[in-house]
Length: 166
Image (cartoon, rainbow, N blue to C red):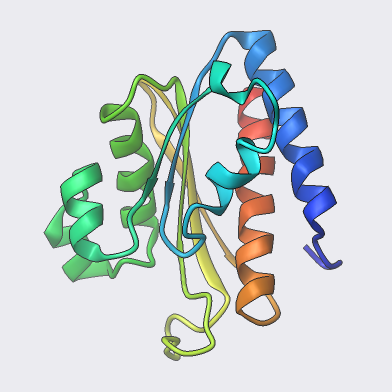
C-alpha cells in the first residue's frame, strides 16, 4: 500500500467483506499477532457482523500460537514466528479451532524494535485459508511507524479475505 490507510478505508473493507460473507453464507475467523485484535475490531464495527464473524484469536506470544492455534514449536524454532510456515499454521489452526469457513492470520514485526536484518521492522506475513483447503501465505514489507504498520496490516488482511471470497 503506497498511500496512507485510514480508519475509513478499513471500515469500507470490513463492509465489503461482510457483504461477501453474507452472499456466500460464510463465517470467518482471524488469528492475529502483531495486529493485536485489529482485524476483529474492524469487523465488529459493522452492525450484524455476528452473522458472519465467528471468532478472533489474539496470539501475541509463541506459546499462545501453539496453545490456541496448534502452531508447531518446530515451525517456530526453524522459521521464527514471522514466517510463511507459522502464518499458514495460524490460519489453518484458526479453522481447526472454530466453526469458521475461512480465516486470515497475521504475524509480523510492527516495531519500533524487534527487527533484524533478516526480518526488518515492517515485515508482515499473512495467510488466508478456506476450510478443507491449503493456506496461501504472502509477505509484505510495510512502511511507517508501528501504528502505520498495524493499520496497513489490518487493511491487507481484510482485502485478502475479500479477494479470497470473490
